Length: 309
Image 1 (tube, helix red, strand yellow):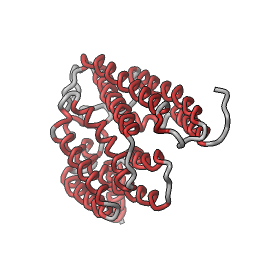
Image 2 (cartoon, one colour):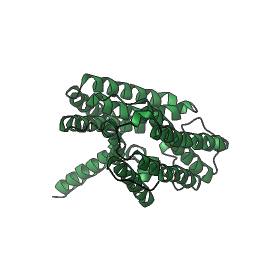
Image 3 (cartoon, one colour):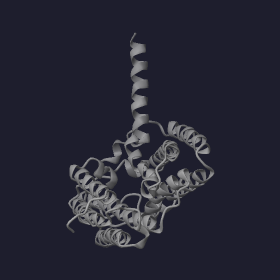
């Protein structure tokens, strides 16, 4: 009887640790796959289901990357105040399990990708190759690492385009690149704050020193406001003719967006943004309110109502 209970407990612990290592909460970032469909104003049920299938495939691929990344970072994670509790770093899972688990996830991801589209499969392959390059080699390269993180975010948008066969506009790609670079820099800056609190001078497993934090802050703020500028230029662009019935309402998008990027940098500077900034936004009440305000502005722009602006 004790043996049965012990076996059940072991399998339960293995399941919990396996779920932790694939990080389902990180799949929120893969919702970016639906952005081309939403931005195109050409919704169809077929395109939606293609994007949904691509989302599932991308989640499995991303989880493969998280497993590999944790295996590569196991030593640096063990001295990190939060990351030391990750399954491999804490000893809850053996590295040998991870090296078997990762190929199984990847095989499932690519099997699903084949049924989406050839273009999506190409983007997924490039995403996985770039992520492996980042994990094994380039994450130690200053600036290169944050540029790659921004590109990896953008790959999600391109994956959605490949799944639905919707060509993303210049405006969308420019906006994404600046915004995602801003978020990548927030992530790296937040890590520096943690290192400073530990009275260490260098970020473990990275090429940054805590003395670099003012530079990262400057670059991040510049990227944030460039994203706002691209949005403003897009709103004023002739490309929007005929897409919105009440185009002037789109200007209501800018104040809450400007507030959000400014606030997230203030929060990061205070050490209140942990790990991924998108996950911070997903659990932050003010971010939800701001998202609702931006959504309301787009809704007002899409209906025939005259506004006193």
